[in-house]
Image (cartoon, rainbow over all chains, first blue to last red; front, top):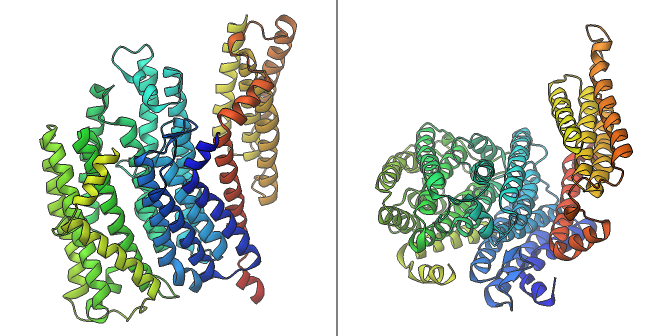
Amino acid sequence: MSAADLAALAPILILALGSAAVLLTGAWWPRCAPLLWGGAAIALAAAFTAALYSPPTLEIAGFFRSDGYGRFFTVLWSAVAALTLMTSLRYAEERHFEGGEYAALILFGAAGMALLSASVSFVGLFLGLEAFTLVLYILIAFHREDPLGAEAGLKYLVMGAVATGFLAFGIALLYTASGTFRIAEAMTALGAGAEMRPVAMAGMAMFLTAVGFKVSLVPFHLWTPDVYQGAPAPVAGLLSTGSKGAVFAALVTMWGGLEVGRDLLEPLLWALSAITMLVGTFCALRQENLKRLLAYSSVVHMGYVLIGLLAGGADGNGAVVFYLVAYTVVNLGAFGIIASFSREGGEPQNFEDFRGLGYRHPLRCGTMAVFLFSLAGVPPTAGFIGKFGIFYAAVGSGYILLALLGVLASLVSLYYYLRVIIVMFMSDIAAFPLHRGTFSEKAAVGLCLLATLWLGVLPGALLDLITRIL
Amino acid sequence: MATIIFYILAMTALAATGMCITRRNPVHAVIYLVNSLFAVALIFYLLGAPLVAAWEVIIYAGAVMVLFLFIIMMLELAPTEQPQGAGWRRWAPVLLFSLIILGCTVALMAVDPDAAEGVPTYYASPRIFGYTLFQEYALAVQIVSFQLLYAAVGAYYVGRTPRRRQEAG
């Protein structure tokens, strides 16, 4: 660890030390709202530091990259943490959460996500992944009086622990085959002529199992709907965006076009992507609960992202990164709206709760409709540009069938997204009026809406930035 | 010699782990796991990593397993009804595994006390290990420390009675 390394770590240090500071403050001064605002300010400070300060080194201790790519995701996940804290303000206060613990956990989770996105070594990857998974175990069960939350937390903990076991075994086998933790060099053990190729392949299979669990690819997706349903809405937002996006960000570094071992990995990833889109779509059709619907929708979206990863190259990787940003913004907004509707008794989740709600709360229901259209990929939203980029890259790399499957899944997805909109706007008013929402919630959701439309209409700036950092 | 002992220990570890995951009584399962951990510790010793072997015994077989036992006792998870079947069938496997491990240890001490037959190039002295851990992997140690902090915070938070309920009760 040199001074240059420390300087490059500055945003992470702000997040981690800030989280410890918030935690300690909360012990002596247990006020929920100021602590959450403080946490959001720390997250924003980290985001600005990462965006504006260009560190002297490109790599930190051989574990993490501190070039444009790493900084880009540090900014993104810090902003996600800030928005999550903003949507949690009233939610946390009404449920008597301990503000210090809550804000500290979310800040450290963002640090873990940023580290994972920037990892260039399996050690860094494992540490980053475990950092935010550990935080999420606690955050999911944070509402102690909610039995569903406890159940969700336990489910995620047990399955997550098994996945961690797979990850550790996989990394150990890849290390055995290659003799190095550095991802780029370790991947050469997968090459056609490599001495210990079967060992490396077994390691990669275990690694893929763990990754499949974390980003909920079919057949490792079974936990997703239950955990989303039980988790507090702001935490579910963090779970569906940061925890999945960070894994994919690391995979982009790892595979970068899949030069070695492509012959064996390609059919596997192809099948995973196809089955994920199919099963996710069919399960989403039958949901009567908005949070479960969003869970299955996130499963389908991970299938799309996998297509982009498989396509690889500058086009594919750029499309993946853009898609991650678009998906993050939209999902964070959607869960933010659910949180803003929540009352002390609980959150509105079932379609029954939303019946005719568009007439009582037209602004937020309209915003929700925009988010759902973006998830379905309707222009002029960010989701459209994201999907266009993915399918364009897929066709360019010869994955015509996969692109076709993706387009079909998107078409079917219109059905289940439109169902929510129909329930909100085209049925008689039956739902009870929900909470009016507070300034911070509306501001956070408004920012997400702005980003969704901006990325949909003028995606050029972000696309240019992504081309430069890749 | 080292190869034979390795295979004996590997089989013991596998068999003990198999017994561990098939036992209904959690206390029995813990005892089998301790057996398995001892066997793995000896394998580490054979491979020229005495430091890791010592930790395997002190941390895993010692600290972690004792914590397991404490929790089983505190939560009263151990079954209370009398098990069926002859008594020796319950303790014979444990005794067998323990004797094998003891025998291997004695054999190692008699034949190869310095573990010289292992792979000397990979022999890591505590000093070298410490340098690697706290210089090359210093950042990793810091991140893990933070994780442990939040694990403790989380366990405390989830396990504690909420403040409101305390006041009401």
